[in-house]
Length: 162
Image 1 (cartoon, helix red, strand yellow):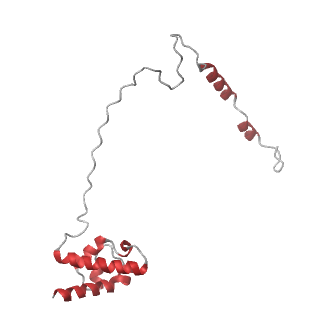
Image 2 (tube, helix red, strand yellow):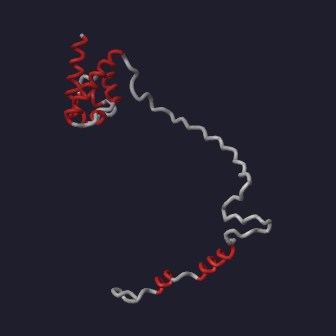
Image 3 (cartoon, one colour):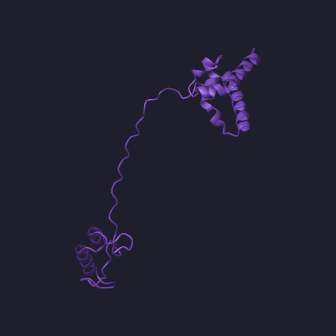
């Protein structure tokens, strides 16, 4: 009986009471297990349940199953454009710019732009914010925040190459 709620329901008391069936199972297990050190019919000590007797060879291992072939999913195309000698120089400039911005804002550089985005910018060399918005990985927020700086960097690169 509970001091706060009153008497316990019957179903709860039955759940707390050990089942007669469980008691029979426990008794059967106690009688079926050999006593420690007891000898079997052959004079050898009886092994405990689940333990392999001494001086017996283990069962031969099953043949390993061959692995299923790896499925090759169709590619959606190259992840980044093929490198170009001029775009490599622009890419390195963009990486240096990204690193300076990342240090200023105390962010990891990949948060600003991923390398694949910088490679796409270096290969496409957009001249306007609209052209910059067509590059995958650049959303409106990144274009608003960094677009003008990227375009200025690309323009200064064109002037130096001319």
